[in-house]
Image 1 (tube, rainbow, N blue to C red):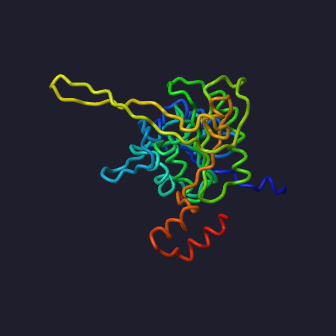
Image 2: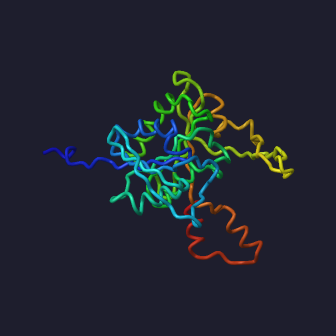
Image 3: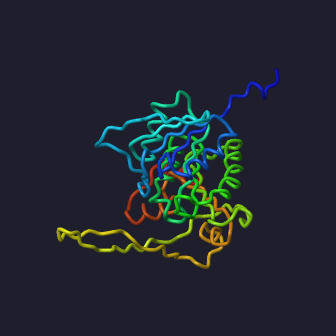
Length: 276
């Protein structure tokens, strides 16, 4: 018997932050189904903007949802990170080969990665040491067209399944909201520096009590840069940004230790020397 016939089918865990009924989740399932056994554990409702939040004050409940295919789908009354944690601890019997999150309805480029529940699930995956990818489409509409995302996302999944990722690193993939035949290709790039300039729409309810709706806009702090995710997306490319779970800026450790009149630990010195 050939070696290939003995090879185990990859186990693919999927989650999202728009809820288990979202069209983007279905698009991601369609990307993944030809590549292995798919298990989905996703929030029962939308949890956009939840970042890496977990539920600690309420009980979590898992419900298996019916499907007409062989995909296992579970809904959880919690956050995307809750979903990954429950999947790893209670749903799956073996460790998944890859964790996928999305496809999010809306951009998660630049600093949006810090607020994103989609990327929260992907980052949680890489904390487990599992290659993980978060996918987002620059279209917030519930009925967005995911054709381009499916066409360009599937080869990215195949590549990571074949080659893996460095431990502690996951991918933040964003698709421009243009027809598939207008996408120019894929660019690996860095995260754009920018800020969200929040504004609050103040209103008053019938009881005379004020309330607020969060609004605002994204301010690009480096509009001339050509190596960022924002530039790639604005110019018709899919952006792929490798994200590190370790947020330590090793280039600043020695400077900070000196300014505080402290000594670096031996472990930090060794890590900093490797980064150089």
